[in-house]
Image (cartoon, rainbow, N blue to C red):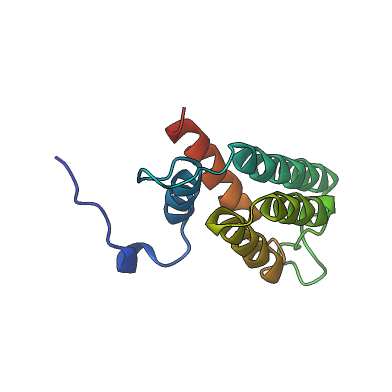
Length: 132
């Protein structure tokens, strides 16, 4: 039995699938005159996720993943500023739509305080597999 794909309304905005599609569109754009963003974009996002994941694992091992209220602690770390810096620097290299797209992604992450790093890391790995 095959299932129909979920609509964007059913999936919700900002899913890992939508981000993966967006990243694939940047790395392998459609159209004869479209210019591609280097796959280094995916690697920067994957590396930021790996840094986050390593820190989260260390905190879980030490039993420090919960705050005083018993809720999951939001992690702050160098992946935030390093990821933002790498994306902004990459965006600065391109003076066209590619640079604007990368800068927009950097700003989205920054405005959300990199809270979406877990699913963006997943989306970047997914996109990397799709563009192989």
